Image 1 (cartoon, rainbow, N blue to C red):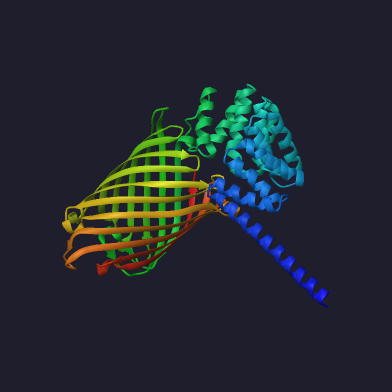
Image 2: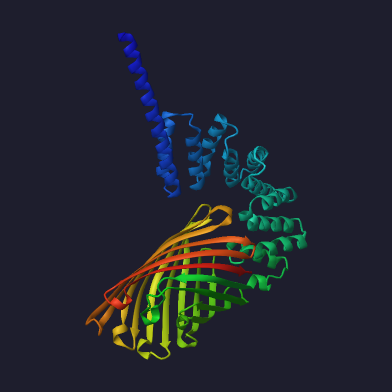
Length: 490
């Protein structure tokens, strides 16, 4: 009986240890993956090393260790972990493809072709494996052989279409098939004219004598028609809060054209139109016309520009306000996943019929973007400090604005954005109606969903919740605003 009890306790102890080890390995793996996403590569490697110490044959730990070295661009160190995974499991998903990518970056093109060929044999639907195999073949100047793999990429992954078309154009140019090269490069340009790939494609197209000044590349047009519902109609420029609910239509138009382009300078003209049409409170129908002139200069890791805007708006079909705005800016990338934009904005606004609100506003700030999920998603953080000087001294204020959010892809090519904003306005002089300085603390929450219906047609769902905590009771308010829009663009 004592022996039986001893073996029962021993078995229970071993089972508990096994479960604890499994849970520890799982938590270490999860923590390592999180550290990879945060680009803390050395810390991630330490987590995977702990797993391997306890379980030398843990395929996941070896795989993610290799992936960490790959993302950290330590290509030589990445070889052994991927080879270890393949020794443990020759069919492990992604290991052979990533080993091929490592060899490609090490300029070991024969080994890259060998591994990537095996990878596409294992999974013919892996667009990334086909793409990098095409790249490796091009490194060996086997341009004709590379074409088939880039063509396969076009059929498998829409997100890789532009870069695949560029590689096809490059291959045809090396094969001296200029017309085919021009066609592929032109198609690459049209996919996303403002992207870095488009810029390189345009340079190569110019070398081949192609025309890149087509309206589709240098111009844009977007039209939106929609319906909106607001439970508290407001005109913030006049501090008008109605506490009335209404619904109605919206109409928007944005168009422009890049009329001058050289390596040193690009100039473009733009026009934006907006109109609301409320069902019941027609006196708050708003029409805005904005004309813009933009100049910019782009380099590999930085860009600079200056924008000018002129706006003329109507309220209830009557002249409402005009404004002139000038905004110089500079942006730069310290690394591929980070982009920073610094800007100064000066606006002069004239209210037609309420000249005490005429004001000059100066603001300075930055926007920080962090790209992830292979640059398909990004997070952003913005800050603005502003100073407004009005003709009526009670409208003078200083403001501090903070905005943050994330934009990422959903299923079926949907784009999802969540954002939050905080704006603190502290007025410099007493407001007569309350006998003290006014203070507005504004919070904004937003959900924006964009779902493609056709290539040039999108459905937008936009919900906003706005909260203004103010010591001026007439503007202390809450607002729910919902909009559904159809957007056509080319």
